[in-house]
Length: 290
Image (cartoon, rainbow, N blue to C red):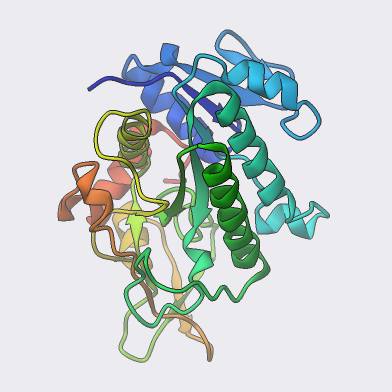
């Protein structure tokens, strides 16, 4: 498969770190330009502020076929004073750079845009986010897709599920970790994807966005098929945890429908097995405790 020339915005984050490991090890790293705000740490990096330096961002994007925007404000940063509206501003900056470069744009979004999780979440469903983060991401999607349509830029919002190792269970584990358990004896079930699988899938989507096949839709759920129990993940990793009664309002299951995604990349039920997810993390040495 042709690996396109890609600009990754926000490459110093945790997903950016995963991509650097996997794409670099697979020999595709030299096709990628990594953006950070801090001084660039080496070859293949560009240091710039996407909001303050739109011209520099456009120059960095020149010659690329796809822009993957991982930049954004997560709840923890918002609690520390960061502005959630920057999610939209950064996405719009990516679209404008894409218009200058003739590049497609992939935006990292979240299942939080859906809100109601009582049914399987499909990209065609209505969005009714209940959190500030979900509302910020939904606004980002709408504004960026509208600007893309006006500027002739193909924009796809990637609603990424739980990434193993960058999640509340494996990624958030500490000694004494407690986990909700519901009346049926099960722990929260979520759509997951392993870090190596995520990197492969994002590479496939970047290739498709660059014109390597059928055009991408405006939104895509990104996860492995099915769901995974968080307790089963911790057990597979050999990490001790203590059950606690799930509080009222706790959500037992969040399921992303990935039927559309499977039209662009290969996924199987094995990609959701707890043991495989744990092996992917440890294979990348992402720092998960043992």
